[in-house]
Image: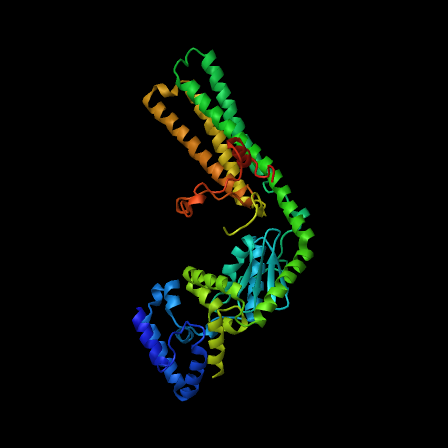
Length: 334
Length: 128
């Protein structure tokens, strides 16, 4: 796990040709020549490397710092990209899961499948899921969608069944939530308490036999409870009216924004996306962000992290760190 | 944080109450018991049951039944007869948020003045 052991390993595997694996200039031609020379013993090497990696790193206690220490070859050896579902299948799974979650109202969003991505958006945020498992967006929708994508990329995760009509309710279908029955029962209880409270007070004033302090205290207690219960009912009715209206308004706003917002989102993303895939690794501004994301995701959960940022990402996503993308492609060619 | 912009008061989920039959029957029974015992307690108090040892214990037990029953009524009401609402609220500062950056010590106020805070706490849609 120490710096020196890793250095020595790196020197072994590359026959001492490559000096520092993170310096962007040196390793590309060196590894290529190296790989060509050793192609016969490739699989043996991979096995040995895998074993070595398993010995070197403690994966039960693996964080961003350890990840930074690993070289790309070690990474590729240790994590099999086929472990994770990606591509079309991932999008199908994500779409179904998101719709199911919208249906049980865990996520407030409209979910749509547009060509090679799944878009979830609401009036306050959006999330776009790409076939390689990367997610981008903002707001609460992004926060809700991210774990879904991580789960869906795992083979042993069983998807939720989405009902036929898995969408947010129509504004006019939203009914006020608390029925009158519960309120009525509470009012009966409150009424009885109030009545008894008044009765006790009057009796205390009128009857000479009730001279102790017990009766007025009990009376005040009953009156307070009765008052509190009436307040509960009043609050339930009032806040219900406001909240249903607010919920309807939000649904209406979402309906109205609907298609325009979708268009807007897709067109906003289009040029940026195209640019970053064209210039392979030259998208310097995004690189930093992505790395930060990588580290954080990994710290959060190893499961979701390494799928998003492991093998398949390097070729489909151009915005990986330039060195990584370059060497990964070459490694695959050889 | 994770959400940007002013989303205070946004309703994320609004599901009507379940009001299952079993709950309805239960709350009716509990209400009847409550009313009966409240009147029983008052009658006992006025007619002086509490002046003897056993009578006193009896009155105390009746009062206990009243309160426990009331607790169950409220729990039932809250669980079965109120809608399921998820609403965006201001996240209060927690201990782990303190002193992340020096200038963030006081957090971001979402209202000016104590009275404004009260108004917003009572009615989240006040001046969005």
